[in-house]
Image 1: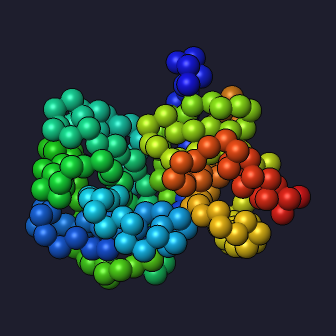
Image 2: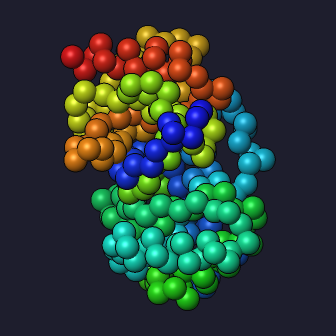
Length: 237
């Protein structure tokens, strides 16, 4: 992709995943979770495929909601000196109707860096939840408020500039999660032998909220995204 096609947009992503509790190599009396299978719609067809990919997506549970400026300034300060080139997003997770405020971390090299990163955030004024607990192996609704780095492929289609095998396509209207789940089941039923994982989201662009779907698949390309999008559009109309 050429440099001029690279854009950064702010928006949100909604997905459902199972989170496991990390019990060691974390700050005492804090809650840290991990999505050990972060793309279940794809990897459910490839049992054990992700076992050697560690750490996965890490969720640091916070004491309260932090606004975007607080989080961004703390993160950019830490990125100036932290040993790993990690990525971070702020958001919420809902488990059994309980809402927890979190920072989602990815691209750490070892689990030892989790505690180190917690200490860095703490020194920058971000405080972690120190009471309560979350059950092991919990299914969670995850909403992330984040910046998207996007390569424009063509109108309505994007590839993630940073994360391989992540793509996005626009949809004509906002869907709630139940609608999205039902549509996804129908789409996948009609696309046998094409395996992919999807999440629901939107970006702000030219003073509008643009609805989109994030798709994950190995060797993702424009042709596959067009096939998937066409199936969704058929069922949305």
